[in-house]
Image (cartoon, rainbow over all chains, first blue to last red; front, side, top):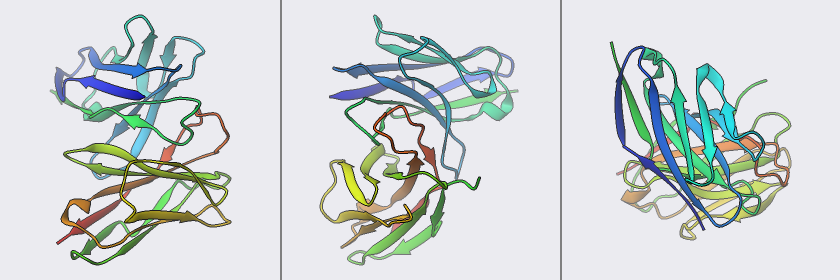
Length: 114
Length: 115
C-alpha cells in the first residue's frame, strides 16, 4: 500500500523568503513522486516529478524537491517566494503497478505575505 | 496543443438524480483518470481508462461508473446522487503507457452540487 502525508495544512511565508513544504511517503515498492499546484477554481498543474533518476529534481518556477529514501521524504522548496506562489500544493505517489492512479496527500495551502 | 477539457464546468442536481460528466483528453493521450476532490476527503482516485478499458479502480461504490470512447474521450456517471457526492470532479489525461511516470495533465474540473 502507498500513502502520502503532508506536514502542515497551512504554511505562511513572507515574500522573498524560503518556501519549504513537507511531504513524507509510505510505499512498499519503489515510488514515483509528484508535486502539483492548484490555484483557486482550477485543475492541478505539475510542478515536478521524481521517477528514480536524479534524486534532486528541478521543476517549473524555481521549485525543486529532493528524494530522500532513508527519510521517506520528498520536500518541496523554493529559494524566494513570490505573491503568485500562493496556492494549494499537493504531493502524490504512485508506482509501476498502479498505472493511472495517483495517491495524494491532503494538501498544503501556501500563503505569501507582502 | 489544447489542454484537457471538461464539461460542464458547473452542475446542480438533486438527491436521487443521476449525472454524466465529460472529459476530452489532450490529443494523442490514451489514458484518462478521474478523481473526486472534497474538503473532507481530499483528492481521491475513482478510476482510469485506457483504450476503452477500465485499467484501474479506486474504492468507490458502484454508483460511480465510467467509460471511454474510441477517440479517448471519457465520461463518468453517478447514479442515485447523494448529498455527499457534492465535489469537484477532475479528470486527467496521459500518454497511457505502462510506465506510471507518465505525467497526468488535469482539466479544470466539474463542480457538482447535490441539493
